[in-house]
Image (cartoon, rainbow, N blue to C red; front, side, top):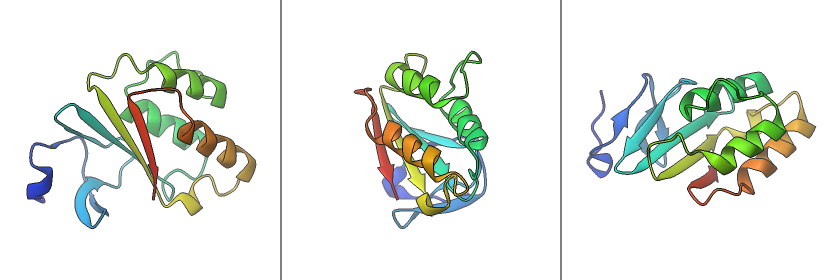
Length: 129
């Protein structure tokens, strides 16, 4: 376990630490997220999400997306605009290793990144690292 004073109060949902903004705060696991105060920190690691199915599974797990999620880009756009089931008031979605993300499908990768960056949710902030 790592202790980072600047992230005191973070509630961890996973294992295996990795570094974000020069701080060890997160795990390299597709089902890991953190909460701090009223913010949920969600992470997509491009090295672990080399297919759209893995991206959908990661987001479904970390954002607690209901089982009826359609596993397609249109459905993703719709759920990102809603997110009413997420308890925290704010959601910070961080995409790391963007170059490796869905590397075998550049068209869908571009569409995915566009949906993430241009989402309609006032609660969701996306950062590409």
